[in-house]
Length: 224
Image (cartoon, rainbow, N blue to C red; front, side, top):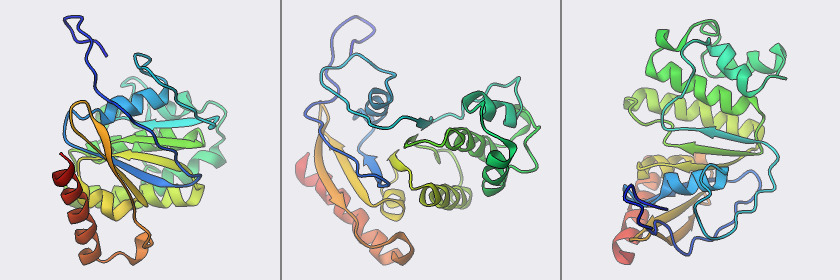
């Protein structure tokens, strides 16, 4: 990519991975390691790179760091902009699963941050994505609210079997939620680890999650 001064700057290097159908993968690494840049490249929003991205998916859902809702549109209208063909029978279960059933006609300014993030998730799922990209969708939420939204999101992912790539700074969050963790580190950032978590999410104890998080942290320390 190019800096504001026009200088070319290498953010990512030697990145190569494939996602299995239905797999939920986390992308972790220090701030500035290019995680969001990589998501934008995959989504086709950033073309300033050398390499190739192959996406067999026909429909892509993207949950950004900020909800990015149109303030003059209701929750339902924001969702329907992304999925204009969605029927009420398609959207009602989605809204209910995310606790938005009573907020469909509310405007973004009337929503808490938690509800706004739920609306952004609903918009991404309304398109029935084959690939779901999530850029820190739980950031700035308190722990209780973040855990609740995580559970709702994972339930939707499992129900739809959508291939998902989650960017997060929270290593414990990654250890709880995903089946695979890709670790980026260095300048430019490279893949320094690709770790599979074989134990099913429902069977992961706090001790197990902590051990996986320690494994991720030690990988970063030993390869940086």
